[in-house]
Image (tube, rainbow, N blue to C red; front, side):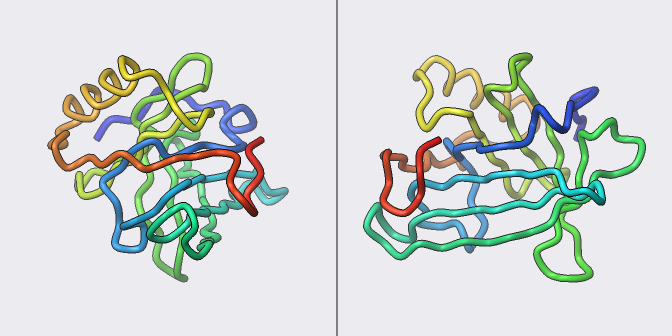
Length: 158
């Protein structure tokens, strides 16, 4: 799985709306899924993943994994730690030049995330991202849209 050539970490930080994914078992049924990144003083990435389980009015869920940039990857490959000592592979496989859209992939091609800085994107942009997912070796038919409806109670849209 090839990553982008370079990621400007400070520019990548902030809020990303999960537009679509091949969900992990924890993400199934997620609504208003948002991943937020903050660069820590030690160079790791504090991550907050929030969503509503099962519907827009469902219970709020939150996970706080820690990202570790892989040395020599130009900030484009991370290990994402949900449970010590394991780090899940996290490859920034596509990143728009203006940092408005990204695709996070894995070599195993088991999970993928299409994310944007806005909670919705035009259909033609979604189709283009889905085509990129196919070019990465995934089956695009497995990708599911993540329902987004904002502003959401308890999670500010900013």
